[in-house]
Image (cartoon, rainbow, N blue to C red):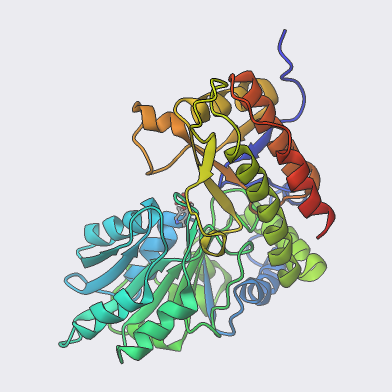
Length: 407
Ligand SMILES: *Cc1c(COP(=O)(O)O)cnc(C)c1O
């Protein structure tokens, strides 16, 4: 007999859970793409997309995933042979740098490993050393989804200013937008990109690139192709230019509904607070399990710990967790096969097939998350721990409940 029955729940760090209302908003006949309701509706998306990013500047929509937004940001601001400085704090920073290299861009890497955030002093030092001002852009992730680290974007901005450097500051908010607080204009970010399938709760397939006037000026000396050029997308003369062709019709209706929820109902600041509360509940459970015994033999191997030790440096969208040998793999399998809950694998912290691979899991808690979903994930993990022969003790769910109850 299997207990696996009923609704499944995705708890990976993207794509995230899609609200029923978003799914229902997409369920309609194909609209006219030349004039009328769709065209009018799309105009309403831009102010709300900007409200989520806290910017008054420009936004372009791409029919692409986050990798497409990565490419769009670089194609509009840089040329082959240009040099950039890339901050890496995990797999996603590395991935963006690798993509830049395939575009003929020279990358200087400032690596902070897999367990810590970027050090602004090191950034300032690297920029001061660039006396010929060869570095055209500083690229960083806000949250690295692989390690779950949260980088201090205002501190990095300050480091650039302290060094007196005029490189563009580009931030990947694909994991964090609509989860962790982000203030594009107040924090002095020139280019920011995000995807629709994480905090924005819409099926994967669209991404957004935001840019200010400084970045728009850089566009004048870059040479993006027709398709990636952000200028007509942000300031179209005719509707199709917004998408470089046919609009992603149904995705746009889904996004409209997601933005109704985020901007007009809950409010972006409440969205951040909800994510913070849910994250703290998850962290409290993990900390409590961490005091448990890994295999019941009282060998005192901690059952699990957070990949990022300092809570102030953790994203509230995703948690990367390392367990005692063998445990994470069993937990992931049990949750998927018996509870219908899919947890994330440990991206970039270990290679598949190695023993360390079975010590990593991630919980995605971005976007459409509530108390019931949070406790379903935590209760299922605790059940999976017991099924795996670990002794998680009994305090973890109570620790989480206390935080949710006291919000
Ligand atoms: C998910 C993610 C990406 C990649 O997005 P895709 O849609 O998979 O291309 C890039 N950066 C970060 C921080 C992410 O979380």
